[in-house]
Amino acid sequence: MDRRAFLGSVGVGALAASGLAAQEERRGKPFSMKFAPHFGMFGHSAGDDPVAQLEFAHREGFTAWEDNGMSGRPAAEQKRIADAMARLGMTMGIFVMNPNTAWGPTLSRGDTDDRAKFLDEARASVEVAKRVNAKWMTVVAGTREPRLGIGYQTAYAVESLRRACEVLQPHGLVMVLEPLNPRDHPNMLLSEMHHAFEVCRAVDSPSCKILCDLYHQQVTEGNLIDNIDRCWDEIGYFQIGDNPGRCEPTTGETNFRNVFAHIAGKGYTGVLGMEHGNSRPGVVGEEAVIAAYRACDPG
Image (cartoon, rainbow, N blue to C red; front, side):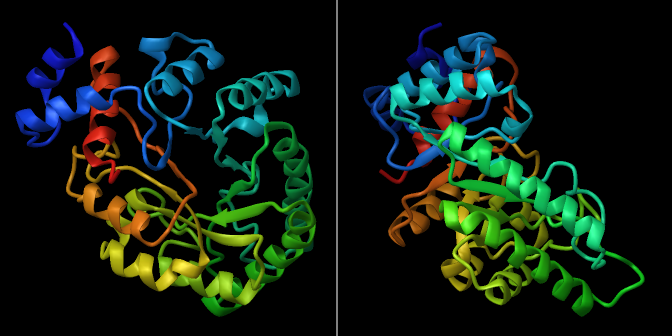
């Protein structure tokens, strides 16, 4: 089945025939925003090799990439990926800075050993970032400490994050704090945009910003555009996923065409990570992802 027939049969949202023709005409042209797929998203179309997946995405018009697990890859593989991205002119998005300290009360209880482990991860991430030409790193601020008031926990987290900024800022690196929704991730220290905003204002460093994951925030509080506007000066990175289902845009309730247009209209030129699954299996599902982003691309 060719691409036009595919789009006509499975569709994305309520696209009209003229919209299908426009998408076909734009196939392979760079997207107007730096939408960033991840490894595995196009595995059926491109195969298992990471470089082949990068090349496939580039041919389809994607100009960025992200990889949560980059820090866990061997150094030689990191360099191979970075060399391919440089050759293709693709921007590297996030990788996770603190995979080992993300899921406990590491930042919330003021423990010196916890802080030392977190800072060790920050220092190690500097080397990874240099190797893969990355600027942004996700920080999950961990869980709450039930024996302490939220004010104490927030203050302890701010102190650890300030110390991490001392490691990152000389290298021009930015950790982006990700609030996670309490339905999927209960008891996290950060779940709402306003709390992340408060923390970033208190840290007061260009190396500590917010990762606005539109999936998590639609689940937690909605009101996406207003929260984006209120937090704008502290947002360093976006991630994408529709709700319910955490799949590509047009499969849930979020009006991504409007949200993307709003973000672009505010002058955002950074990366938007595609941290979601595919709503359909196989090549058909991968084609649907590409079609969804063509349908929502504000350019």
